[in-house]
Image (tube, rainbow, N blue to C red; front, side, top):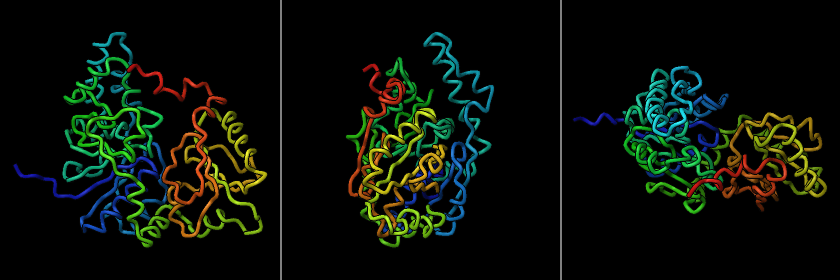
Length: 363
């Protein structure tokens, strides 16, 4: 039978971070190969704005596709198989049907024939695209959702509590779908750091982001800023200030944690920790809609949507400290020091059972 996989690579992305890593991986591959690649951006949970046009202008990818990915809640039929029947056997039987129907739900919206690609890379295969690939029996490479995201959340097991060995076996047969390396059609699961995970499937592969960064040329860094910063010069001015403040810079990364009032209190407390000795820059998470400029007028708020990693591609930009609560930042090359507050800090503001899910897993 003739192999119809005559296209090269395609990257399926759900966030700006996913797209950033896809571009980095492709820029590095282009140093060794002339092969072409495409990218597919899911609009299910993210507005990519003008990113597709900037991607097209740089020519990193041959084709840029937009994907109208459909959540299960958009279909009454799919959701009818997504309820607790009160019995593990009945639940698993209906999950087989759910797995097939959610995959089938995507079919009219897939903008290109994924079966024609030699390599399909999927960030966050827990989203419906993973079910589609399972439904169509298309082999793919899964890539971790965020940098070292398995450090805080053993996603596959958290989503499949109870009868884990049985569910894992069913996923290996393709009857149900489990993300992050456990699907029958997942060739491998790529992470930045194997040691920064609670548990992993046997097909895990490690590709350190720092090693990828080391292979980027000055021209590659410029391409990345042109892709992910809509107005690089303006953003540089906002980041650097007018030069009249002699204090060193500290950047606080917000995250969509807690309710709005609790989040305002949490990040307000962090700002109070540093505002006397540092010029405070706030980089809100794209899904964090709190108005930090209004709440903290004496700070510089960078509202543009871009992956934090691109700040390391700006020539000459440095900060003394970057502050995060739970976002992993090992590859923050523009910071002299990384301050990771962690779950113990978050415990003071939110019920620990909400964010300490992995610790409660049955071994």
